[in-house]
Image 1 (cartoon, rainbow over the protein chains, first blue to last red):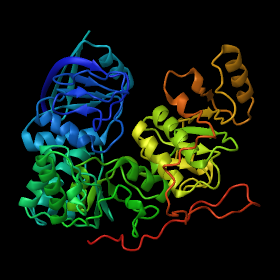
Image 2: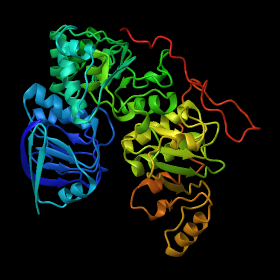
Image 3: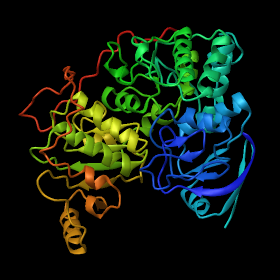
Image 4: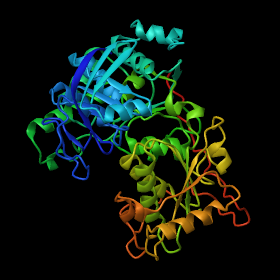
Length: 132
Length: 371
């Protein structure tokens, strides 16, 4: 996916299941058992260790991107097919680009500690600039 | 290297099977490239999780496929919808949700899906068998198909499962590949006497899900009379507390007759972690004191087969898993036990053998695909 994304970093302390965990109308985490319940994903670069839970998370992510309440980009430490397809569909149907990257552990940790992140991608190669 | 396409893949992309299949194939190609797949493979069936209404995007996606005269190319079942179509009068929600939820369910049927509307497709008459490739959505069904049936599906999300159904193809990656199905973690269970299997299954499922993420676990020491319903509960809890798509119950599930089989295709240099689980129905969880932990670690590390044993102690964790792992025997979780007896695949009693026979591969008649 080509494009750029930039935003403040939101590092989640635990993986979030978007289905049941995110209200796509507000962009807020609504899973009351999640340690970051109440945080807003809107416009953030979401740094999360891995995907979690329901395979319906694809739709909830795509719906939040349609409503412009979703994250600007997502950085994981392991590839996640469910979140990836949510991003692909939002781009295909609405032209909303939410780049999703799976990084090596050390790079992911650097992102998790950053304040803002800028992601640029030309479809082949992605560049991540993390500001501490 | 890149993602190699066969003639059928190019035909799908070029619209020879219709524009809906071409649209689906474009998404599959992007998906496969992003995940580093090398080629596409056939699937024998699909299960679609996208018929539950989550918002306008659900309808926008399927309506586009219906408008393009889409038709599934393999036998395809449907997960739950937003509405009970048999008793629509019982719906008490918003009118727009009722209308759109119903429309979404009907649109999937228009695409040729079987209106099964169940999140337990593995309990339908026809189900995939050992080694067969499928594309399933619904996290509890995915983990059951992979673990208990030995079929091969990646963790497909909404949209992608339908793309696979419309093309009969998926990129070969993830849990479709044999080398990605070995265990990276080994849980040794000390199942206490008196704890019902269904309660144990829920506790183990929560432990595995919350401690393993998406890593594959081999579980040693589960009771030999674990039923399909117990595995259903174990997998469902593991999939919802983590991202578990496959587990191996050593001696019970088809790809793990022995622990060695569960670890067989492990690349050299990759050692599994061992997590010992001191479950107990009668004794309190271990205290996380240094002395007791040290003693336990010493005791375990004397094992001749020790490969960097780790001691998992629920009481030392901040995670609420500790409350799940000490479910008292007096309060077993009963709601997972169904009235119907789905216990046909319980391993045969073989008291003379130290390793029970694995579950026999279920029948796969009818899952040959349509192409």
